[in-house]
Structures are given as structure tokens and as C-alpha cells.
Image 1: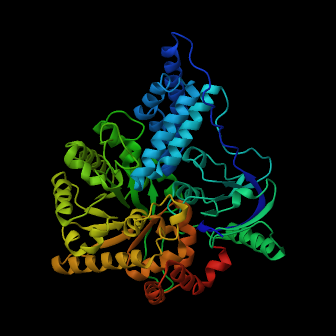
Image 2: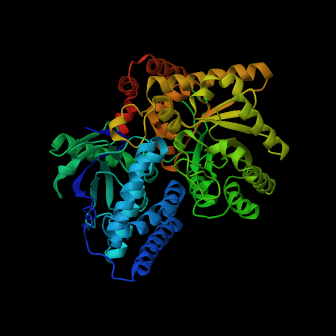
Image 3: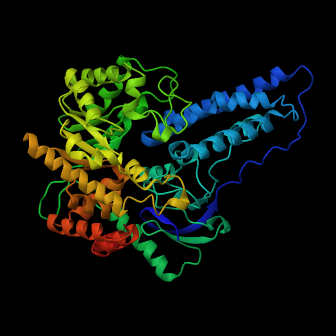
Length: 564
């Protein structure tokens, strides 16, 4: 058993991820006299080659995959990694080959990131992936990656690097299973975006031999290497129901006609175009990092106007919620991050960067306002990592001063949920980022498979924070006579069962990957608002996340019928 993160039932042969790059030996020879400079240059050239390859992959990817690949590309030439490796070439305890120097430098950086915890610890798998790619480049070997197979298969790995997950071919890879990782890890997020059934935190799966038929149920986390006829039928039934699942009609509603707009999370104009084709009712989260990642300098206002305009154009007359730059922590930028922070996950990220790097936020808001003026999209703007009512008021003032009439905040810090009536008294709306809210509420790194049970949006504490946010919004709206909407744009919105609970708690809109629109719509349309509220009460009373999930799922038989 593991943790199910993307529903679906698949029975297919396993292919294990290709073997990890072997550690270069030490001692492994030393550079010839007078060649230290050339060996240093080899490391620099290899790092640049790896960065170029990752940037090339990013250019053909979209959405979250594009963002993650771009961020990983920046790590390839990170001065900490490259400079440390070059120093090791002439270390007093013995000269290293370039391959060995890169290997040890990567280990050192990974150890440091792991010690920092939180978001920085999430980057450990990225830096180790970059290390392996640079070593392979130095050796003249192909980089590690997805195994080749002429037949479709279930991919099994310890974990997947973003560069691999982002370039999976869903026509060949039918499901993902990893021994580590958590429900909010990059692997899980990208699996949802690709619509691939997935199970994470499943220990022992790497012992399954290549070619062994395995049954995977991504809804409940089952991985069975000895499937029987019943599971064969379940897989066949899911394949039939998945192919017949109706596409989203463009109108999210409960069985009694209560409107629940279903919006899309997007990261570029290309994403927005696909979401529009999928009939999303608008954009609930535009990640503006796509404009800033993979750059050494801040994009110009003109560059940003063009980028945002492409998204607004895809949704004429519809709501588009823009999140201002969420830099820092796992998304460090050379011109907008303090790389010396002892704990970046709790440091200067999101809105907090505004004080230390004045002008960047104002220029971004100016670009959003300029782009909005040229299109008919209903543009709302929200700031990430808001912790206090004072910060919310400051942000609202900046927006209104530039003609952006609907300012809002992300609720991902527990303090914002606990003081929602004050925070929302300063703005017009809130959107709950369940990924970060869960991580911060439970003090659980979302990348760690060992903490997957804690890092679960079904946790009673997280659901209580959602309830408090909704109640705070109602109080703020009653105080100033202006209703305050509360949406959810985290991964929780893509879980059809949890979507019902969120609606029952009073969430007004749900935003998700375009692929999740159909399943979420189908399940929502099977319950009335009263039933959703009853199920929300059941989830709130549950003593554990597992109990909450089980109780709600058992009351929604359509989930089983559709393999969700």
C-alpha cells in the first residue's frame, strides 16, 4: 500500500526506472600538471550543457512542468554547486577528477538543503538529478531517464526528478508508482496534470521485477504485484468508464442546481488556451512565475504585458485570477532572492519579497493592469504568502492605486485562516492554497514519503482552517456589506470527493488542472448542497484524515463506479 494521489485502475507490466548513475571513484586520478584550468572549464561547460538541455525541455513543456523544469535549469549552473566542484579539483586531501568533484559538490549542496528543511529540502531530488546529468555529460553518456518500451507500462521508481516527470509520454506510461514522495510532491502534481493514475510513498516497489504484471489503484493507494481476475475486471471497467466519462460541460453545478464555478490553474497562454478548450469557466490561478523563471534579470513591463495578455485573451468576459510573483524558497530568482537565508521556507517569499526588493511588485501590477485594459477578461489579483491584515491592506492599496479593482489574498499561512475576518476585511476575496496550508499547518515537508499521512489535505486540522476561512469571510462581508468569495486553487480541488466537502464547507469556486474538470463536475452533480454540507460535517468530525476520506467516499458510490 501507498498513498493514492491520482485516481485510476491500471493493470500492466512494470518497468523500473533506469539504474542510477554510478558514483565516480575516489581517488580517481588527478589532473595533469597545468590542466586545472581546463578541468574547471570542463565542469562549467558540462553544467551549461545540462542547463541548455533542461531549458530546451522547458520550452516545449507547459504549466507546472514548464515552471519546474525552468527552476531546475537554474540549479544546473548554481554557483554553489559549480564553484564547490572546481575547488575540489585541487583539494588538499587529494585531487579529484571533474566527475568526482561534481559528485561530492552535489552531495554537499543536497545535504545543506536537506538540513534547511521545508521547501529547500524539496529541492534535494532536483540537485541530485542535476548532479547525475552533469556527471553523464562529463562522461559522454546519456543522462538517466524513462526506460524505453514498445508496450505501455507502469513506471516504478524511488522518486522521479522533475525533468523526467515533466516529459513522460502518457501513451506509453499508464501509471506512476514511487517508493518515496508525498501527496503534494512535484511528482504527484505533474501526474495530476498529465492525468496519470499515481501512487506515492509505496515502500518496497523497487523490488518488483521488470515485466511483472501489477495492479495499481490510484484512488486508494493499492499496488498489487499478484493481481487476480477481480482486479483485471476492475482495470477493464475503469478503462471503459474513463473513456466514457463526459467532458466538462462548462457549468459546474450540484444536483439541485447550485452553481459552483470550476476554474483552471494555468501557467502560460498555452495552458490557458487548453483550459478554454476544456470548457473551464475561467482561471482560478494564473501562476505568473512563468514570466520570471529561467531568467537572470527581471522581465520588462512590456514582456509581462504580452505574456499576461495571452492568458486574458483566452477567456474574454470571464474571470482570471492572477497570483503575483511567488518567488523565494523553492523558486529562487537571482534578482529577487536572498540565497543566504537559514530557512527559506519560512523566509522572504511571495509578498514578503516586496519590502526587500522594492519596485518589482509595482511593475508587475502595472503590467497586469495594462494587459487587462486591452482585454475583456475580468481580472482579479491576489498576493501569495499573506500573513496579516496589515499586509492585505498594503497589497489592496497598491492594486487599487493602479486601477486593479478586485484585490485578494492567498490563504496558505495558518495565521491568515485564523484571522480571516480581519484579513478579508481589507480585500475582496481569498483563494486557499491547500498545498502550502497543509504543509505549514502540519509542519510536514510535502516531499517526504514518511510524512505523507500528515501532509494530507483531508487532515481534520486543515479542514478546520478551511472552515475558519469561510466563516471569517462571511463575517468580513457582513461587516462591510460586501460578500467575500473564498475559492480553493490547491491540489485538493482536483480530488472529486474532497471537492464535495469543500463545497459543503462553503467554498464558492474550485480551480484545478484542466484534466480534473470532468471528474470533479461529474461527482459534484451527483449531490445536493445539503448532502455536501452533511458530508463536510462528517469529515470535520472524523478523528483522522484516513477516517474522513473513507467516510466521505463510502457515501459517494459514483466514485467507485467511475474508478475515482
